[in-house]
Length: 339
Image 1 (tube, rainbow, N blue to C red):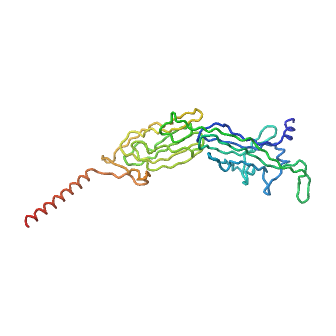
Image 2: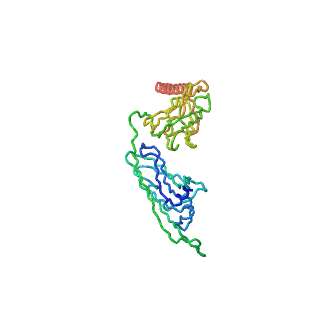
Image 3: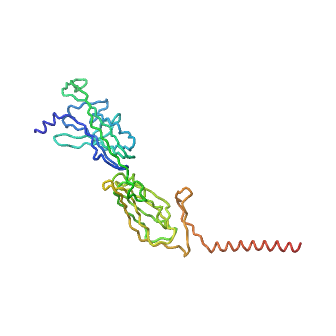
């Protein structure tokens, strides 16, 4: 009972939460701004600010919500129709409500912040605007009318993030910016193939952060294979790569696939490794074969299998050309003698 009475007189507050203030370039950080108030206050004293009625008539002002110099900022919206709506600047968005103690609730929005360069990164102070009243009168035309309407403005403390550059020491030569730790798994669709015959390889990368932020492994560097096609999918925290590979020569395995990443918790680099996969690749028809090479701009050839080239045919054509040249020379000499 005592907690309930305290909640009734407790004033709303604005919270700005950043789980950490020290991070590395490319490391994602989720920050949250919350309007905290008692459920009784929201139900009985909070007044509408705009002609459009909102379940939570509060206007948040977040200066960096639309963008930030030196960082990518993304609002993590909630599309659940059961969640209340509030105003973010001039936009109406749904927020996430979570119950607290003493009859209070927190109504919040979250953003994903990804720093792009080293140095201090200032997240300016967010603010909230709302109106309330404690005394009301019933009007036949306008209904419940506030008698002591007051507008309020709350402001949280700003946050300054310390963004560190990724270290040069220990950086693998194959590192391309992925933030981990990352795990990797690979699977081939066949255990046997012919030179020039396409194979389907599926590779999955799993780890923290958005899967869209992970570059694709360098499949074009797999010795003995030509990368014909590559498609990317995202499932939860996993990035999946559907790869079409064409063996260019007989091999007994698909080489190991390595993926370098930086682990911000350990502050060091790591390399995830999918082990080699046994694969029996042989030449079709007993002769050597070749497959299309990458295009002049480094693009991938799509469609069409490798074209077989037979040395015996080349020898036959060369011999025929020599016989033709010899016949022409003999004909010219005979004509000169008759002349």
